[in-house]
Image (cartoon, rainbow, N blue to C red; front, side, top):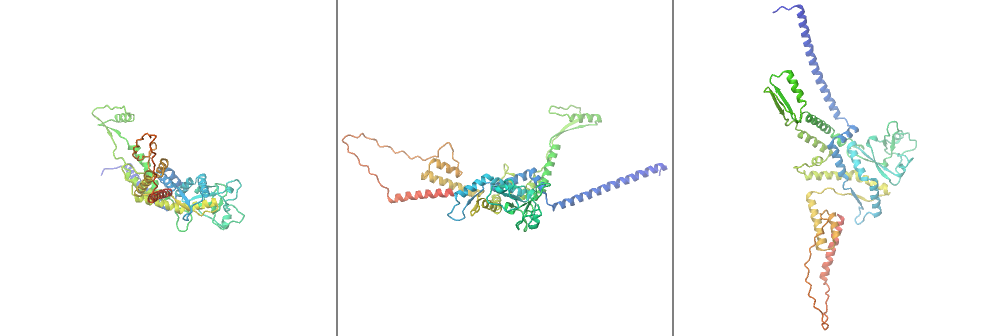
Length: 484
């Protein structure tokens, strides 16, 4: 063993202690990192049980394209065909004056647009609220909203669900909201926030239409919404979109590579500097030590499988067929007819369960009484039924116009448009022309010629009966057509 001086021994000891301390530090750092990762995972699991706040849900709707498209599309599909009102008693119809008032109010209040917004609010914020406004609470210094609604109806308004408390109060608890001294009814009042520093308002339940589709047990307020259900999927897709853009930005284009056999540091620096100045007109010159090449990325990233998983999750949360959410791409099938039929059946259930009662309340408030029934127009038929309907429509038009001649060209063209039968606008409907009878040659009548007697034959009873049956058939076809 070689001899070591005391000084060298001390130096060696310091080096050993330093290495040991360094290893301990690295080990400690690794353990701390694992602990942080475990803690982060536990925190994420805790977040799983937490409700997503309204602002986060709104941001997902604003920023995630398919969530935005899915909610908007479903909301529009709900009210695209709108509804009709009629008497539930056979043989009776709704009077024209009442029907005119309903149509005038629908147009003035833009009720279709407000119902679309109402369902959007429900999908984003779990609950939606529509205020029934009479002249008394539109005018300045009108009656308090804590009182029952008066007679008549001026308009309806969508209320921002974020301004409404997610609970109701009654009796003494209600009076404490904004120090109401007058007696109030024994009902559950809604509470609306007015902003920082302003008192909250009580709103009588007769003034509010509160809709929610996602409740549990006996709760009156929604417990979740499509965006909250799809929040993790939407967040994952947002992160994947960001990562995909980052990868394409870094590696989505060819890049040059230069190898130099036994190259010096100076040569490497010069080549590196030159590569940073490449342009479409650049060239490369070097001796046999320089090897220039272009690496073309292939298969940098394949996001299709991940994206498909995101799409399925979003479609499930929005309760709509996948193909309706992402659209049918070229070369793909249109999807299952059964899926589409189920989707439109679900839409009809939403209309009947949520918006038929809402319309009954609105029209009752508008007219004072409402004893009529709401019928939602169907917005989907399968391909087989649609083809049969078109065939029957075409046969009806043929009988009325071509065979029986009951209607003229203008009426036939109008019926064709209503029946969705394409007819060229510039051309007349083809009419089978009967062959012209040859007119008999007229001989000049001589003064002494005898005048011929022309006998007019009356139609027989059988011919009259056939004509009457044809007219009756035509009337029935027109009546059936009016009902469609």
